[in-house]
Image 1 (cartoon, rainbow, N blue to C red):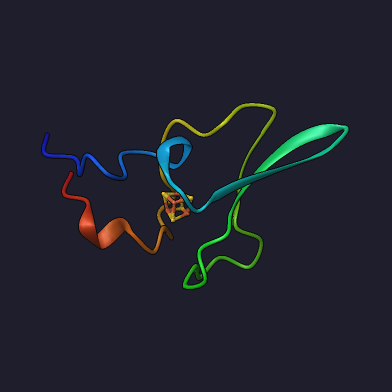
Image 2: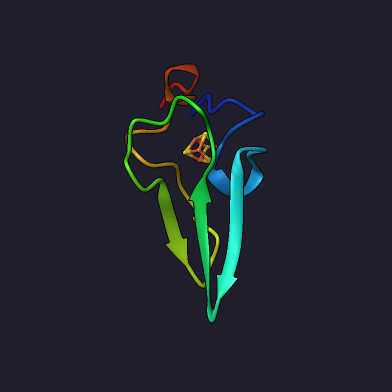
Length: 61
Ligand code: SF4
């Protein structure tokens, strides 16, 4: 246990953004993200955080 309260998953993260082009696309807008697209999910907000999350080092799993 011991997930950081602040960022336990993307849906609670201030860096998660969403746009709607027919499908709702959720993506990460963090400046330090290392993933090209930053895509997190389609239609549903993500329930987890990706391996490439730049805040992940703050999270102990
Ligand atoms: S990947 Fe990390 S920084 Fe990006 S939205 Fe998810 S929790 Fe926030």
